[in-house]
Length: 556
Ligand code: FES
Image (cartoon, rainbow, N blue to C red; front, top):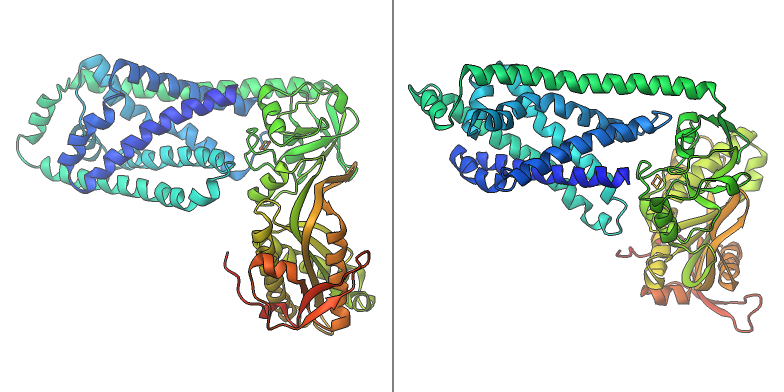
C-alpha cells in the first residue's frame, strides 16, 4: 500500500516535471515563446486544486520514500537505488530557494513570477554557483524520476519494444530543456543591460523587493534545515531501533549451500541475502513487481505470515505453488529454509518467461537443442581439476550467452553437455528459427573461444549439436533445492539422439527436417539422412551440417 501511494505521488510529480521541462525547451526558440507557453503548462498547477495536489504529492512522495527506505533492516541496495535515493534527497535541498521565490512569493506577496524573473534572479542578481545549482536541479529531478519510472516499466511485457525510444526521449528532453534554459538566460543577461528593463520587469510581476528577499532567504534556510533535521532524526531513530533489534533474538535463514544468515526481526529475506552477499535476483529492486526474487521456502515456511495483497497478486500472476514466496516481501518471524529460484544477472524477459510457466506443467510444441563437447573426458585427464573447471566454465558461459541471445532457455548443463529449449514464449515457428540461430552462434563462439584458449589447449574444442522439435511437457520439475523449468518427452530423447549421431556422421550439427520446415529455412543443400530413433517404427528425416557456423543467417 505504502509503495502504491508513493508511486502515485511520484507520477503526479513526474507529470509536473515533464511539462516544466518541455516548457523550458521552448527557450531554444525564444524567451518569449517559452513565456507565452508557460500559462498553458502551468494552467492546472496554478489553480488551488493543482497547487494542493502538487504540494501533497511532494510531501507524500518524500516522506514515504524515507519511511520505505528506513523500514529496511539493512541498507544494502543496488547502485541504481542508491542513486535514486540520493537524487531524491537532493531535490528539496536544491529546490528550496526556487520554491520559496516563486510559489512562496506568489502565495505570500502576490508575486507573478515569470521566466524572465527567475532567470534574472539567478543569472543576473545571484552568484554563479547558485545559477549552476539551479540548472543542476533540472537534471537531478529528471534523473530521479526516470530511474524510478524505468525500474517500474521494465517489468512490463511491452517494455523491450519501447525502451530504446523512451531512453532516447529521457536523454533528449533534459538536454533540450537545459539548452532552452541557457539560451534564455543569455537573453536575460543581455536584456538586463538595457536601462530600465529590470525596473519594468519588477513592476510587471509585482515584485515586493526587500521583504520578499528576506522571506526567501529565511524560508529557504528553514526548509533546508527541516529536511536535514528530518533525515538526521530518522537516521538516529533507525540506528536506535536497529540496536534494540540486534539485542533481540534474530532469525536464522538457511540457504541451499548450507550457509546460515541471521536476520534481525522485521527484515525481509531479500535484505538478508543482499547483506550477506548471497546472489539473489531482484530485478525491480524489491518492489513486488517482477517476481524474480521468489524463493522456495522449506522448513519453517508453514509459520510464515500470510502474503500481503500485493505479494499475493504477484504470486497469483505466476501461478506460484504455496511454497513459493517473494523474498522482498516476506518478513520471517521464525527460522526458515529458503532457496532462491532464479539466477541473478539473468535478463528480465527470461525471468518473466519462466515465471509464466505453470509449475504443474503444460504441453507445448518447442524446439530442443542438445550440445556435447567431443573428447573432453580425454582432454580433462591431462589437466589439473582447477583447469578443467576453468575451461568448462568458460565454455558454458560462452555457449550460454549464444543460446540466451538467440532467445533460448538453458534447461541444464549435464557434465559437459547442454540442453536448451526454444519457443517457450515465442511459439514453435520462432522457436525453430531461434534454435538454428543459436546453433550458428554457438559454432562461431566456439571458434573464437578456441582462438583465445589456443595456448591452453592441445587441440581445439569441438562439439556436436542435435536439434529436434515437437510436443513436450514443460514445467518446473525437481525436488527440494533442485527445481528447474524443464521439458520431458520423446522429442527430448530424439534431440539427444541426434546430437550423438553427429559423432557417427562426423559433423557438427544434425537438425531434423521438422525444425527446418517449421523455421521456414531451406537446408536442401545439406546432406539428407534417415535416422532410426528408439521407440519409433519410422525413421526420422534429418540434415547434417559439417559446421553450424555455415548455416544461413536467419532473420529475427
Ligand atoms: S524483487 Fe521484484 S518482486 Fe521481489
